[in-house]
Image (cartoon, rainbow, N blue to C red; front, top):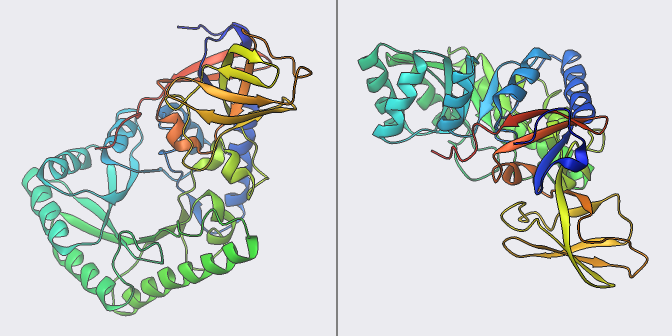
Length: 362
């Protein structure tokens, strides 16, 4: 494996390369925003899946972390992080046993939207002498998971409140259906609709006599809308750390700090070049990734191990052995394909981080 101190061009490819100065600027920029508002930042680890980076975010002022799956939370807890939200339903005996075991070693919160699931977690927690914090997921327009605002939310909150082994901590809602909308006016209007549903649900529960300590929502695409919305207490932004081609179009204030470093392996003709980065290296569900800093070169297709570049002609001087940077269209799923992140500063490798939560989909 590559060792710190080598030149960027000596990193073998394909590899995920981080510009450390840009990444640290993104961390500082988001921290500065939340230093000026009432809400706090609970960054989502589903983007980087790397404990060292979660610790950097916490050191900059973040309140714990959000995890997509229980497996991610176990990795983060093993690194010493205690304040953990699993923003997903944890269902089934096997996973619930893992959840309550983790609750003995960390301050765990979990999303819930089903009374039977609540009862099962409560019973398992009592068995091991643990307490699991719960956020009721409210459907705010995503139409994926979650209970409806109003009475359904209150009924579930009352159930949690009266069961031993679990603790009602608040509500969460995700406006993912509009978070990447390129029209800022539409994004802001629809985000406010979603956050109104969430905060009114919190007010309804509070008026019934149950305190709602946490109202959690948001993401990178709406951090500055959700983060300033009255009644929201925390935001689950994640992609801001590295950004990608999709998010950068709508949130340009954060820099694209991560690229896929690839090698040209063939130049079959004036208008075609092939690189060693295909579908097993970078994902394309948000569209094809884009070539960075090379005028006249466009990624036009991917197979398993190859990326196909269309070139403007012989004037584009790419030859076999040349290395290029490609900007992912979706950073989260691209990182999940890799074992390591390569942190570079001033043209040299400074650090290599294992993607410890890679593949933790259980």
